[in-house]
Amino acid sequence: MFTWLDNLITLFVEGPLGLSRATALGDSVHFFFFDVIKIIILLSFMIFTISYIRSYFPPERTKQMLEKVGGLKGHILGALLGIVTPFCSCSSVPIFIGFVEAGVPLGVTFSFLITSPIVNEAAFAILLASFGWKLALLYVVCGVAVGVIGGILIGVLKLESQVEEYVYQMQMGHADIPDMTSSDRVHFAIDQVKEIIERIWLFLLIGIGLGAAIHGWAPEAWLSANAGPDNPLAVIFATAVAIPLYSNALGTIPIAEALIMKGVGIGTAIAFMMATTALSLPEMLLLRKVIKPKLISVFVAIVGTSIILVGYLFNATAHLLI
Image (cartoon, rainbow, N blue to C red; front, top):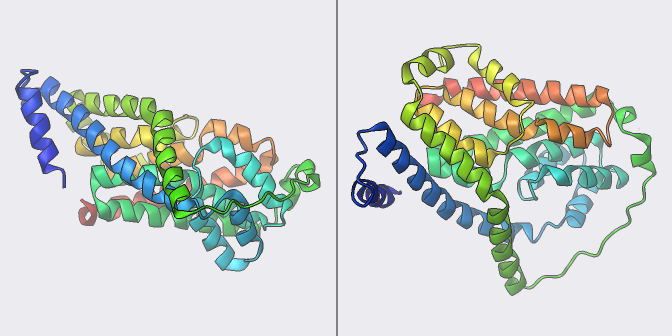
């Protein structure tokens, strides 16, 4: 898909910059410029497309839809709606309060909250650019599955008492759902492209920069031996290391791409990405405002275990994905 860009960046690196791609520096510089341009192109397209769809699902409408559906269908709908909603973890608390106050079952609420940060248009665009459609699609399917299964288990455990009492007492009211024309939706989508790229460009450049350094200089033999798909503990270790960190998929995907090219297992890299996104310490601190420590522990245990299983699934199917 991007052969033209690869050739163009090669000409730039070996021409004006005077660097050979056969050297670590030249290969790293090529990786950096190639990934920045490739990701920005796909990112802009995906943000525009999903934002246009998102204009039909403002938080109030999402809440109304989830109020009417229960059981397995409710969990699936909650996870699917999580894909087309804003993915910033700072929105998790008001969304959580709104859903609980509206009577949305706790498990369905968690299906939404688990999926929303893991699966979004930005992550899909970068995965598509870096690894192709098969891996990107499997990532989305697994992210939705983690949300559905996690929500079902939390619902079965009947942990409503682990939500802070004030949440049930709040009356947030109902906001009017804006009636948008097609032109309004296009402008909304364009504004979202500008806003999201302005918000994440630094994460993106840092992530690609680290990925470029790994691509050029990381010891391939050591990484392959210790974090390759044949090491059964690598996925568990990557998940455990990721939980205290703060980043998002945008910053970790270029790093994962470079690590995979150096021999790190696909599942190990995917598990690290998912855990950093879904179980970051800042998000746990935000959720502590509305749920008690026991529910946070159950949430981390269920989602963490699910992510580890996803990592092993990716390692087992790696030969089919790339």
